[in-house]
Amino acid sequence: MSAKSEELYDRALDLIQAGQVAEGLHTIEESLMEDAEDALTWRLYAVTLTAIGRQEDAAAAMQKAQAFGLDDVDGLL
Image (tube, rainbow, N blue to C red; front, side, top):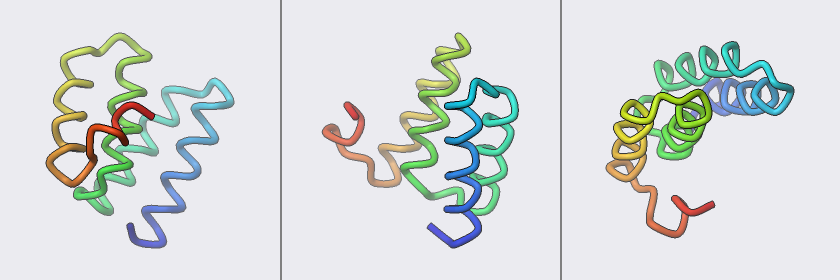
């Protein structure tokens, strides 16, 4: 994960935890534009999409996370 991706990931996580889910989702998408192969960001994207009821998109995001190295144990966290 690049420094910019990590900064965006952390910001997205803070926003989501503060209840600003839409802004957090947008920030996750920015992070993925910066580093589209980061499994942890794809997992956060999947979890956030699940939280807002976008199940199909969440499943696709989780598949991306797994494709980029997220293992089964990581997926349970």
